[in-house]
Image 1 (tube, rainbow, N blue to C red):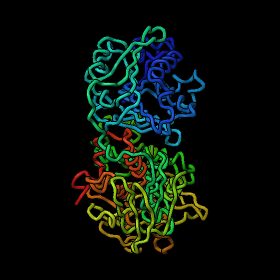
Image 2 (image 1 turned 60 degrees about the vertical axis):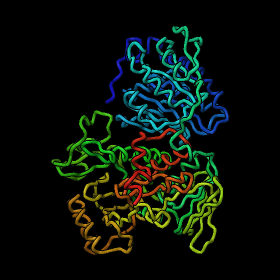
Image 3 (image 1 turned 90 degrees about the horizontal axis):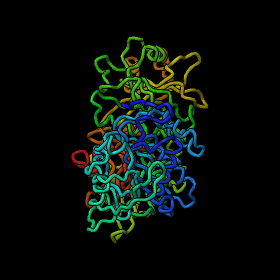
Image 4 (image 1 turned 90 degrees about the vertical axis):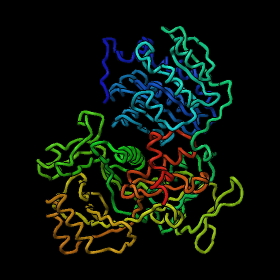
Length: 621
């Protein structure tokens, strides 16, 4: 849990004096520019590069990140993508970030953007997104050694060694920690720090860094600079090195949430993406429901699925906030999850005052939702509803993406040559596309192109209609045994929606009256008053129904990775989102794109492996 910062009488945070080198926020910014940017030859070193990756060992008040971001903004030859990976055991408060940057007009708006995403910082990894996805901050909350071990290895271009002084926190500067840091260095990686302590130098030199002292800023006489240039031959490779290549042409099969998200992530990295959709328009399959719910998943032990969905909700939240119109295309209303009293258990230490964004619903929240005040429930502050079709449109509308509808891919053929392109053909053999890389993201129809993978169709039907005059339904989405979303703006009248059924191994989309009745009974259990108000519509048949087929895996987790472990540069999968496409699509797309480019991941390596298409029983039949 985040600890509040204790401020001294001079306005300096006592806990962040780092050996008394920071005498004011102004001094801290000057030190960040001189010690870290200057010590790593930035911005000159990144000039003309496609990407630049910074690894930092202590985020503190975020001033090194903000100064790096600001330097990137002002540089006309900046890299197309800036990755900044930072480790912090105790994130400061939002107001502390703003206060630290307030005296710097050039940093203040950046600090405000950072503060807007400074939520839910539980232990683990958090991906914060800026500049339309071109500046990515991966904040790793936890002990420095544990967070370094949790990282998927990537090649850092710059390393900022920061944090409490070696005297106050020797673990942060220990030989074990610095050896772990060196694991991320490539030959030529520059390192900078304000500490010139002999034990620090003695630990870095055997790791392969050539070091020298440089003039510091008062009150520090010196600072330390280095370059990774070991005398031995480096043999290590990033885990996905076989897939790393320069952006080229990519074909994405499927224009639902998964395919559109992949297309957007790759286009931001310079790929020319052609999206092939079998239907007449995008978001025509399971992504075509009128409105969907975006909500975290909570379990008493904070299980793997809960952590994955929480990361996915964060990813989608920022995409929706950037691309969609609040109140029309999506609404950040919060979600109330109704559960039985015996099931309302949160992980230890979670409460309304902590960094978590889910806690026990208060009597006031229950009453506002139209539920008895003694009901049991969980309030998800970072939840709401989204119109999936609008999100798909937003992703597909980004530069570098071409959509081709009415194009059902029947087979994918690899042309001769190690790096030869693939061709995609329809059932009659007609050429649909030719590309260096292919991503299969066609929902349950992906099974036709990936017959060895454990893809399972799951049919779902829901009921929806228009809100009649005087109808008073909950102002926020309700979920639990089914879900209810109401008061969704629409030109023909506000919508309500309730459901849904979940029928495995069923790919039929014909509407069924028995499923309509099942949804009615589910609504009665979820929200008695809403069921009473909507009962006449069910009885008279004055409502609509929608059915779609989701795609799921055997362990309920998406499949992201190469179709064949023996051909990592061949077709990849990004599918099996189940009934949580809104929660998983953006996260999985970024995971795929990061693996293709050897980038830092938004997830710990163990969680990324849990989504790998080749992960084991869930990744193959």
